[in-house]
Length: 154
Image (cartoon, rainbow, N blue to C red; front, side):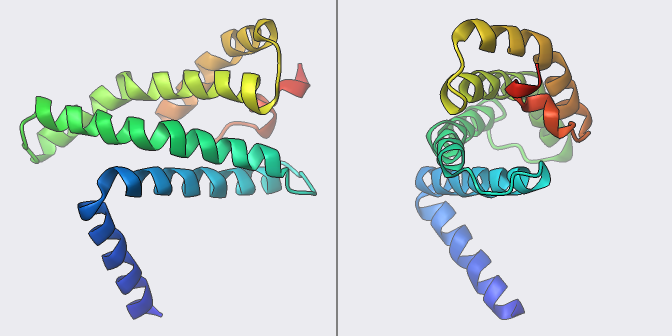
């Protein structure tokens, strides 16, 4: 089993080196899908909501993958190939102060408008109410209550 995992990892790294954007798009889509399946199960949804799952895969593959790819290329240009721990810390700080807030904001908007089909007025109010705690949780690594991202609780 270990050799299978090692072979899979080696193949993934090879794809990442040869086709970085494509690999990151697929990875982000797959991880978004897996996280939604887990989220649906943890929140007690009995029957998998396939439309919601697919729309989250689209967000991951269509936005998160490409954005992350190009954002990290930009960071690499800014820091011109430096890889020491101080540079890594600076990159993480920049990401947490720029990319993380943007990604969380766009996800909340996308989820409300596209996944749940809510009118802009409701989405805007929900984002205004929940965004600060979502971003705080993102920064501190806490797990949100399942109802915090649910538009039906208001």
